[in-house]
Image 1 (spheres, rainbow, N blue to C red):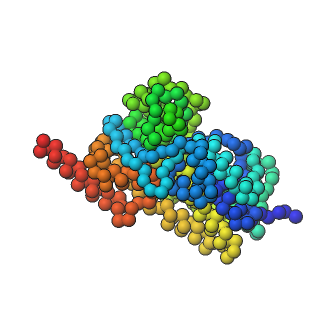
Image 2: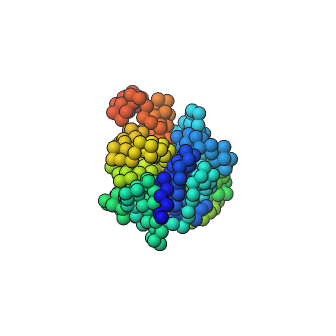
Length: 403
């Protein structure tokens, strides 16, 4: 007789492992599978925003993560012309930088401690609905039957396409990152987002992993002339202050490139008896490329929804309710971030916006909300931002004319 689990979770990254933890903590029979053996590296920027720390705290992991992370107290945005604006991260939670090799193992360990069964080296080929719920079929012929399936496979789309959930490959971002240590000077404890020397629309980052070590990378929407991620990284690290920062530093490990799905606004979030979590649902911020926080949040949302569904019934209305929950939680910030990326992340505007932010704390705070992926402040949407920016620009030009 085939054993039917309550839930099979495909993908043991932050979203899948968090969902497995929250489900197992409620007493459900959960099997969590991943194609990799853990601990394993994951190419990423390694930044944890305040919204990510809220979920880690709810999982009882914040102290463990803080002990192995580099604390970040602020953010810095550098314009294409090299001008910058900096602000503190305020609130109950700050921010951290921790390599995914470490973070993902911490979260997976919590899922296992909560009761989830973890099976590594399992490559799932497809997921199909069954009379009992759903069945995940591995390439080696093994099958995992469950009442509900969760897919948390990140940017990899093979399972989604082979299962008929994703009809075509979405257009995404490209990114590349490398680790550097032995920097000559202490790094500021900031998330540094840079728009100098990168393809447009795109950004570079410098995230400190210790006082004199960093995760440095670049991400961009590929255009006809943007080149490869490796070429963009090479240009970025040889421009201006980044080149000076890296003088005498040593690269540890290879440069790694990776795709990023940022298509949540157009992506499917469910199939029959199946829910998608994190980047599998396109949940990576289209402006900053941040995805760990959305993976953790959507993993918690999915787990809570599954608990309700296994009580009230897994049916079509339950599935569409999940989509509505995700849209209600994330759609506004994703539309806002896309709008900013497409209309404001242009060199001439950024060169004006950054120095203006230094003179207008309200505008600088709005930049903080954008960079940290926080929800759009009530009554302060894209059109309001545009109107206020026009006022700032008009005042700036009038002052220059007066001078």
